[in-house]
Length: 143
Image 1 (spheres, helix red, strand yellow):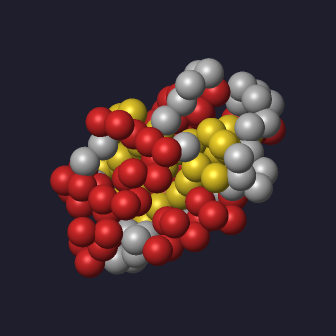
Image 2 (cartoon, one colour):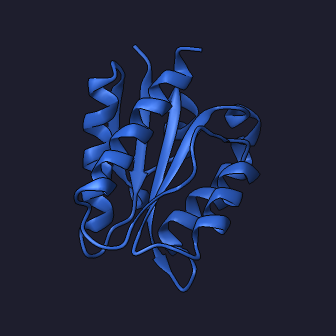
């Protein structure tokens, strides 16, 4: 069964809520979801996953330091991440979207959709967007 790593950093709980919604969407689409905090995510996790989703709050128009460390360390295994389906998600987001997407591409990951954003706790349309992104990620694995 295809596996999706969902790694995130959350201080207020909003990004964590997004990660949990994404995990449910991935499972309902037929893949296994592994949810880990960013500080517990290793290169081995990235390499072994069939697809990767990374989440962060928007801090000063950039990803949280805990998430940036994932990218710094992933450079060592970039060749193993090449063309791996991925997505990113942001809470309280806006200006970090571009840098986040660029970091994903810089380590070889292939984005299946634009970065999903939530200004606060995910609700309504944002929940629908998260679920749609999760389904798109699993669909990319079936191609």
